[in-house]
Length: 171
Image 1: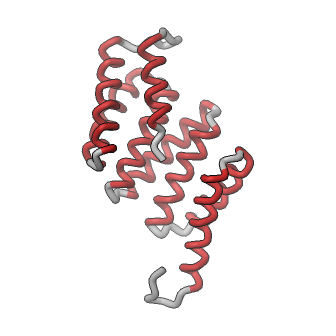
Image 2: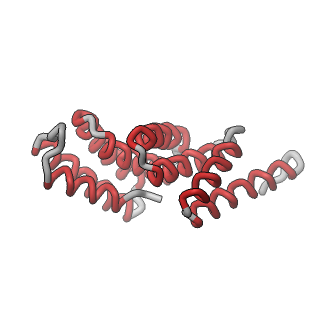
């Protein structure tokens, strides 16, 4: 669920060309290095280290005030935190990524961050998880993302099943 391809693309674009708010070479190099280290740690299953590296990259990215760079970093931070079983912190990261993706009109990024948020809400047994998953399902269908729609439908089925169990039973 990480947006690795997007981070690589954005880092390449930031390093390769000037934008309306050009980033310093030092910041670019630091962001790229931290992302590379975060991705490596994530692939090795060292999710806490990955989260720490994404946070470092975010410090520099925020100084550049570039939502297209910050949003995928937040999403990947959320995924790393989620894998570290820190769903409350992951929820915050996914929500911020969602808001940024919405502000720049990135429907796919918004969908993926909303799915991350819904997954955290479900894990935390937040009552609004059902509504969030219904929103993910509706958005995924409209965008033609069948795998995401299936995942949302699966989450909704799990919630429905859990609501039908007696107190003390597990699903």
